[in-house]
Amino acid sequence: MKKLSLILGALLAVGAVAQAKEEVVAPVVEEVIIAEPVVEQVVVEEAFRPSGYVGLEYKAYGNTEGHGDKIGFNPLEEDKWNRGQNNYSRLQTTFGIQVTENFKLDGRIRDYNDLEKNDEIKYENKKHGTDTRLRGYYKHNDMFTSRIEYRDTEKNEERYEYQLRYNAYTNEGGLVDKVILAPKVARRVKPNHRYYYNRLGVDAYLTGNLPLGLTWENNYYLNYDMHNSDILGLANNTKKDKEFNLEVELYLRKSFALYETEKSNLNLDLEIGYDPYKFNQYKRIIEVNPDGTVSTYRRAYDLRSLIDLGYTYSLTENVDVKTGIGAEYRNWDITEEPRAKDWRWQPFAYAAMNVKF
Image (cartoon, rainbow, N blue to C red; front, side, top):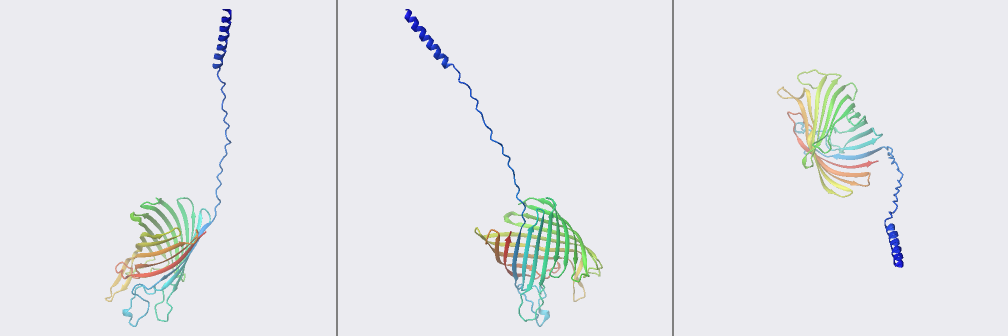
């Protein structure tokens, strides 16, 4: 009995120790998270680098449909419209450079040449000489940009102009996507520098988009001209040296992509519109009629359409070449509103290169 008591006591002692081990709670080890060092990202702005382009285009114009410049034996049977504006070429050089973030320059030089190379008597081509235009732009902010322009036309008329261009509205891709208003001051001097006039005015430039991929452009040029002598050709013996006038341009355009690869494309471009429509404050004399009456006008317009089939090939990422043919349909010479007529086609062909840098 005594041995049994000892055995039971030993078993109880072992059970108590085992139970105690099961109830021991394992120590809690806290996870230590070592934070990675925070590295600030420093954005390095790329230094400004000037960029720009240079373009060269040679364009040749043929005879206006059914018309030549040759003088006949009977002047009464000759076409008097569009004389001297046939068979000529235009070599055009364009360039532009972004000088700084806010200042850029662009230019256009057009050199006209007569393509008539025979000994037949004809009228001198009106399209001859050089037309040079230089512009400088300074962007004050997102709303205002100053533009200075100098131009020397093929008729040696010098033009100087300053505009303050206000970006009044922008909605990229909208029915109206841009509106620019530009008050201006200008001066124009005739070849002998004895005749000139000063100009105050405001321009408005509007562009937008229509269904079917059509785009439109509508420009207004409102001018108040102050001449240093009486304006020539006014009707009713009017003597004035100051006058308001307005010019309106309106174009509707559509481009068709006929063929396209990674490096080339063939496009057909169409355009129709007024180029421009002119309104004068005072009437001008057109001609004196056989009965002694005088025909006058206050408005005149060029209404034209243009077809251009052009092929462009990219030699490199920055060099493109282009060639094409086309024709322009316009009332070339008789533009006064009461008698505008003689719409004719004039064909042209061109080759061009554009280099970006």
